[in-house]
Image 1 (cartoon, helix red, strand yellow):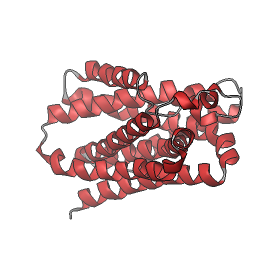
Image 2: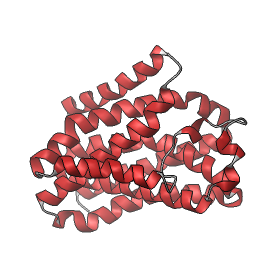
Image 3: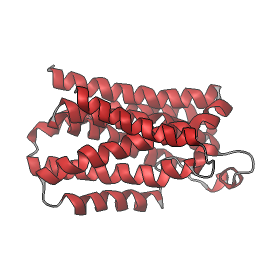
Amino acid sequence: MVAYEIAVMFYGTVAGLATLLGILLMRGKQSWAIERSQYVNSFAAGLILALVFFHLMPEAADLTEIAFPIIFIGFFGFYFLENFIVIHSGSELHFHESDPCLQHSSEINGYMAFSGLAFHSFIDGIIIGVGFELGTEIGVLAAFAVIAHEVPEGVTSFALINETIPDKSFLFSLIVALVTPIGALISLTFIHNLNEELIGALLALAAGTFIYISASDLIPQTHGTHNLRIMGAFLLGAVVIILISLIS
């Protein structure tokens, strides 16, 4: 196995472990995890958006002329799916007894939530593989962006599934965590055979989905607190991407 493949599997596995960390935090330290989730979300949003605007979008635009339409498709695609399947975290991450999400939890289809979360995690694994196909720097940056939002992903997975199908909550959440390294592994079977145009399209698609995750799920959960530390966490995430870029 070459260094490229080892890197893809390593970071895919770390991303899966990050999801597992979120699951374990939710199981053992639920209040602690919820209280600090705003900082995690803000940091992840800064990191992801810096990656999108400084790396993914320019790289995609260099590789394909239709990068920006595909970025929009990626954004709209996740918006469309999230209206029918619970894919990612948002308000569910901060639920409490008065939260309408709990009051109407019986109306949520747990299996659909599980399917959507697993699909999202699978795409994350593919993104890691595509990043490393372009080079170590973009691969590491993409991996960090994925890993950063996998902890809240794990919290969300367990929270949603536990409220709808509690007898299978840990098993299904664990599957969501495992799907990311599986996606990374599967990417190795086809990524070498793609031309630059297709790789650019995949990067653009990743950029669109990342923008949606940040704008729709992560950033809104940091509003209303007027806490400078939360904004600092956002800037820290962006700085991390810049520093990694400089040393890669």
